[in-house]
Length: 328
Image (cartoon, rainbow, N blue to C red; front, top):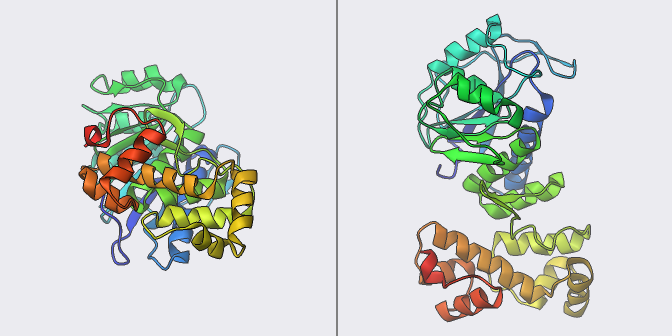
């Protein structure tokens, strides 16, 4: 999905039924709110417009707290849109209630398409999507307790087990609860870039996975388990503009300290020297550019390397397999 503009934010609709699991929607919603906050602080337009909708204006959540003022299910949703479906308590999803039937009727009217109307499911929200026919011919996942239920709801859905989340065209599904935050961080990275997603994850004090098959932390979160505010400020700046002409004095200016003291801070709190950290961020940026289809020269330029040779040197220095050109 292309980056949203001030005139064209992504409308994110959290479709909530009575009993909706609070963590399934509140965590992802907070991630989007913080992403808006980060973008606004950087002088950029907010990319996400959050809406909480349902078949009825009130709903009692899984923990007994009542939600009021839910907006009606939009027909049709303004585009670009994400529709977020979340789980419900219990061993299986009851689709026979009046609210569930109304939601399924609305879902069947959606026309999913990349960059226009996309689906995000958390936990057993995938089961609701399957009952609406939105997962037929798609690959999806859900909470491990609902895997068989998902397969039964739509035999034409390829059910993936033991996955944090799965992306298949305009359909993005996650295993449940905290993995919904993982998925939303991944989607924020798609729209706003990995540096913004890393800032959101850091603010929420959660781990950020690089992708649906990769359990490792994002390179933008490596060396950031400390709580030193000035150091985080430098790391944020480097992550947002890895191509800039960074030096230790330039980083020290961001931290409002001396270059020598900044080096001590990096080694003590982050466990890495400032320029080594910079090279790691530039390498991660170059890898993302290569994955997106840019050639080696373009990736090196975008990441701030002075030449292809410098990129290749960093590639081997940090133990990457093969060569950059093999990733194109």
